[in-house]
Length: 381
Image (cartoon, rainbow, N blue to C red; front, top):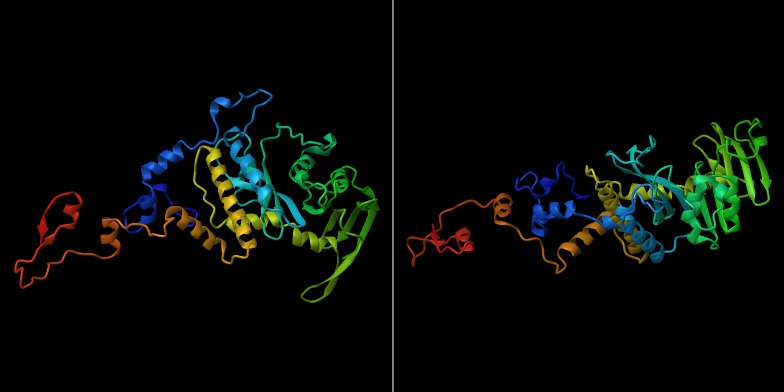
């Protein structure tokens, strides 16, 4: 349904020639599909703790699905060195306690996810769903003073400790304590910084700079830089040195900090992931948030499968990959969808016609095809 989008769910099973698609009715009846969708569950409601209980889980309805995909994503593929952490949004406008409003996203309202993605392919290595401000996150080994944004990054990156990865984040996650602790875990970090962050060097804030000038301060493994472009840019990095690179523009050549073009190039892994399957995203109105989130995660798994498919040396687009999945699921034997008599008469342009006579049978007649299907023996001209 993400490949062929219609205004109503029932249009997929419509016999109207404008909407008719025989694949859906051949695979499953509309009543059967609606029944499965109505009773779709991933956990037992009886095992859920009541609100206010210390073990209460707001994502109890889809917790098995989240744990399963997080484990499979990490086990099946090892990302390249450059990774990034950023937020994504699943469109949802119903009543939900942890629904978020993010004006910079196209959906604006919905369920927020934090993703750890590989930059080169957009492969999602791990994700976490935002559960509300009152939900505390205590990752194993994480210092308490890092704050909520730092704990999110720590939780997502912790399986990659000690492997020499380079992490890129935006100013929501960037902080001096986080970068320092991750450096001790052999995770180099780079990101734009908010000058209002605690521990960020205040000497850089009062330094006036001309166009393309920079000011830098170094403290052990961390480098804090202020660079003047169209506005002041603050960067914090444990990967780069205070060096510049020449960038060609339309009319001139300017010098930029090495961390700036690297950040612009390597930060967009999550956006690339969203961009790849956004044209095929299945989004239908529902009151149950967990149904929409579960379908989103299944499509996320399909894209990760496409990355593994491409890494194996196969060629083809993401669209072609999805079409092959559909064909193999619905028709494992390679046969095409059976065409009903109604669809045949509408699409193949069959009309009643008088049967031509022969020398052996002057009044020509043939067995009625419609009656014979019902077990009735009847001839017709």
